[in-house]
Image (cartoon, one colour):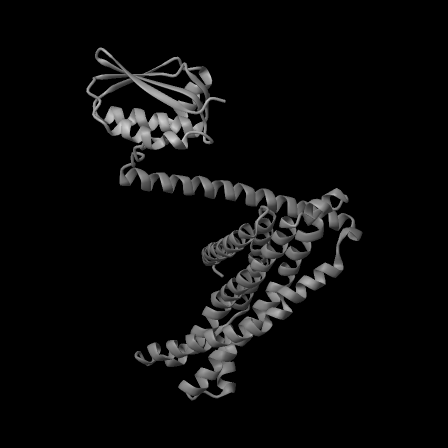
Amino acid sequence: MQAASFKVDREGGALRFLPSGDWSVASILPIDEELRRFSDMPAGQSRAVFDMSGLVRLDTAGAWLIDRTAAALRAQGVEVRFEGLEEGQRIILDKVSEGGRKLAPPAREPFHIEVLGRIGAAVVAAGHDAVAFVDFLGAVLATIWRGIRSPRRFRLVPLVHHMEKAGFNALPLVCLLTFLIGAVIAQQGAVQLRRFGADIFTVNLIAIIFLREVGILLTAIIVAGRSGSAFTAEIGSMKMREEIDAMRTLGLDPMEMLVVPRVLALVFTLPLLTFVADIMGLLGGGVVAMIELNMSPSVYIERLNSAAQFWTFGVGLLKAPFMALVIAIVGCRAGLDVTGSAESVGTQTTSSVVRSIFLVIVLDAIFAIFFTRIGI
């Protein structure tokens, strides 16, 4: 095949550039320097015509050399046009020219428009998440109802296993943190109430705050960070390894096999954890009351009996199953949303913890308003 070459003719007021031969990456290197000298020299004419009819072959490398030469002439004020181009040559030259052209930066929206756009996108995403959450909740409840109608469908061994992991194994952490938080509340309450000569009401403060709000809220947050994230990571890893697809192929329902045992385990164990958390919080408050207020254990227990009624204790326990349902559903749904990468497992695990804690706090606020309105 003929090697790449070119010649230049000057016809009147026009410069005529005539490439010929094989302008591919294998044969254009010898003419590269010569082309640079040609494109750097003063043209002396106002127009240049690139006659491409003599080309035998043209690839991206050859097209880039021709485009570079044409661009150098245009930079000197020369009008450049092409003749004798085949359709394929024209397409490749256009693509090379587009690739070398500096793109203007995208126009930026005004700041307030950008902020409003992000808020709108967040609201739309939250709406989609709410719809998906309700849909998943309905699927879980329907699966539980099928299990109630046919008890043989319940998987008792996984249920007990997850109750142990989500409940019993979480006891040390829950006990330690609630004991310390109870002690902190009692210490701060005693310091502040002493200014008004009302430090005896520290016990009332501990009982009401811990039994109604702090005990269940702190326990739910611990469980969301510990067990909710574990649900997401476990199911997400199975999704990534295509184990869930294999289960469906075998005719097994992942909702029944994986989701329902975890949901029921958390619904059963969170009220028990809340009960233990309340006892430990009161115990931590009692230790501080004995140290700060010189209060005997019998007086502390008597003050607790007078400060805490049945519903003071019952309100916290009543919230627990609902918060457990929210944590478990968010965690399991995030696990099923994992795609085929390890990065997706981490992203969904983080997302499930944040969403669970957010929904737990929102749910606690709704319950607080509701119980206050009905006088409990």
